[in-house]
Amino acid sequence: MVHIGSRSGFEGEPGVSLYSASKFAVAGISEALSAEMAPFGIQSMVVEPGVFRTDFLDASSLSVAAHRITDYDDTPAHVTLDWIDQANHAQLGDPVKGAALIVEVASTEKLPTHLYLGRDTIERLEVKYQQVQDDLAPWREKSAATAHHDAA
Image 1 (cartoon, one colour):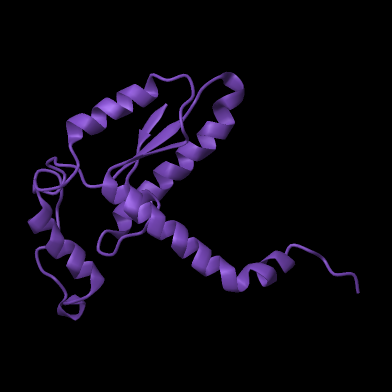
Image 2 (cartoon, one colour):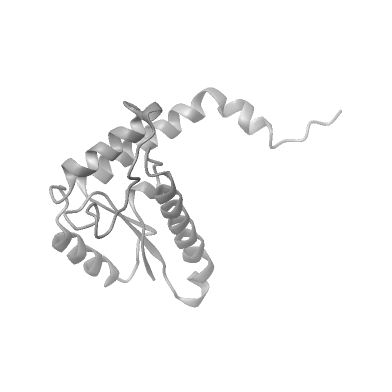
């Protein structure tokens, strides 16, 4: 099984929170199915592309609110929404190369659980890994201690 997720499936992005939530769900379902279906010889992989040069960001695919709330001006959410017009059809990712890699990987004997596509995805994944480490480090011991029942 090949599921199409997104870079937004491992990193919530401002301005597109519902999209990110849906892609987190795709990644979670795919991961669960990977383990669930393994005893039957069925593999599951989620493809998580970054921005690819498609019609994804134009009006045929994406709708944005006609009126913006001014309180959001100069916030990360509006930065993302402003970026859409600049990035549309100028994205770095080549959809033909991406599709070819998906076919190549899907034709192998062992699917990865995640297939990350695009330089931007790899860069954001590395930022996410660092964020996880930064979040974990100061609370590691106390977090681990919550798993043990102390005898009174």
